[in-house]
Length: 338
Ligand SMILES: C[S@@+](CC[C@H](N)C(=O)[O-])C[C@H]1O[C@@H](n2cnc3c(N)ncnc32)[C@H](O)[C@@H]1O
Image (cartoon, rainbow, N blue to C red):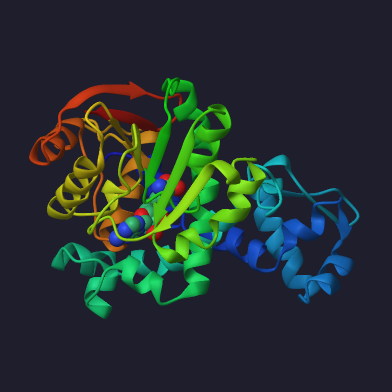
């Protein structure tokens, strides 16, 4: 009989991996990162400040220190590591809202993954008979949480897109399903002569003003609420669609792309910013991240991640053609269509 201790250890780690999500979420729900942002605190002080049981808090801390999020400075003084500091909402590269999103709404849906695989339907379709964005429109708190999480994730991607794509000469940039404007704000900040149109649903647009003001572009950006299944603001020379198509099935993607095509001026270009599924996935961190996102699309909005040739087919069905793919420094690619 072969010695399968390595396999067993690897599998145990995978089976139990999810505890890190909830330990980090608990830290965020208790606002531990905010309380420690100014410096270490004694466990009893931190327990009083966060209305926690000191002994249980110390155990959560010990757990978080095993994954490099916190550290015990000795004598029961608890501190954040530089990794843990990213859980502070005010940190410029914060991942706090994303931690709450993954450990909250996504956690619940992923817990019923087998049901989504059996039925091919998302959690919302099975439980509510409607799409996840329809549900979001009825829940202001969840919508705000979701859009904050998107802003956090998009902040890094926006820098990668600006590094990969030349926006020189763009005059009117329309971000379709642009959320609360993080990407468009970054592009407009880099293109001081351009005007922007942020197009999304009410619940996303409502959160845009501080994002646009922080980037100093509010005066150059019009915010328009509506549905991309009906119409898309016209006369832009650049259209952005970031992390939108992966939310939808092929049929709905083609409708969104057709609405964009109808709105686009003759020489306008459309930039799809999405992850590309490789023909064959490997055992790598980036492929794991992509596969995780794909399952999240299955149980959440009911969409999917796609290969380059699948994006080309969607564009063709909508009367456009894939012109070029720009790789970025990160996980996303920019698919340029005309
Ligand atoms: C995954 S988020 C991406 C947001 C943004 N592009 C980003 O990457 O940060 C998808 C966006 O599509 C928007 N959306 C969903 N249904 C929509 C519709 N029918 N019309 C316009 N926007 C919609 C959502 O509100 C959300 O902001």
